[in-house]
Image 1: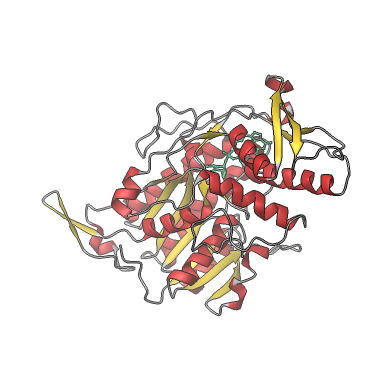
Image 2: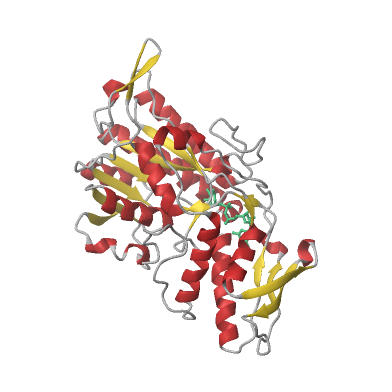
Length: 402
Ligand code: F7E
């Protein structure tokens, strides 16, 4: 598949977060697009994920807010982007029970605001909205593919289903190239600390630091360690998103699809019966939270045993780098029921066969290397190890530890 190299304008929301910042890195490296990162006007900003991108003249920030249609209209009218990638969201499932209205407003009505702006000011723009395996919720079969029914278990999942329906309506009603990929869990050293993977790697790094300083430590406290998730590296997913946005345009004649190339812009008249597809991106493996924690603890130098069951289950230290004489606490991880969710998605396992076959997409980074790369990074960030020269999370050409 050809990634267009002609100069196009890409508007990305959620640009300072994990996915947004990897999307910027990817587009700066792989294309010559002009990139506009939309950020909210805040008194305290954190653009650490974008530090390197600011050195590139093809990247700039613009101010806008998904909760305000005026501001989105202004940005879209001014830039008239060729691509609009909406990665902004209230993305923490756990908070969506406490913030249901905000979750729905940003994740669903916010998408409506984007679609309206596109319809009005740049109807040929290609729009991507971040969809989620949380839309499958109470799963009916495994592995889950694009045809799996939508059965949300949280306000977050419901908001993404509402957004999916809006994207479909605008695609079918106005011929807009609007899609919502179905992304299973994706993590990295840029992940927010409220998500379980980063909570574990940050927590274990904190414990290593305490041990090195000969101090006592508090365990990492987790909720349901038996939830099964299909985890990948976020870097692999931004490639999949860009491929989804650049599907070959087909013309349907007598029910047969003929490729018309990967033209960007001016596609409305070409759409006819053809519609861009929405794909699942997933690793195709499922693992418990507990398995992730085990890889991380081993990589950090711990030997351990599990004791107890249910809310009493604990990971207890057996040895640390062959010497625990100076270690002042024993419990590395314990369960705290306050982190249980009112309703859980128990098993996610994605089937990304369609994306692999039709988009030529394939994840490069294994579950094992993802977990090891994240703990290596957090040990470095905590000041207990030198900066990793090559991140363990990736294949040999990876630069994600930069
Ligand atoms: O939870 C369990 C928790 O918050 C994963 C988002 O990117 O992926 C993400 O949603 C699992 C759940 O991610 C703790 O109950 C146990 O079963 O890291 P998470 P998520 O809810 O799967 C989907 C695809 C998205 O679209 C979302 O935006 O881990 N778990 N103990 C815990 N989770 C957290 N956060 N904290 C715990 O202490």
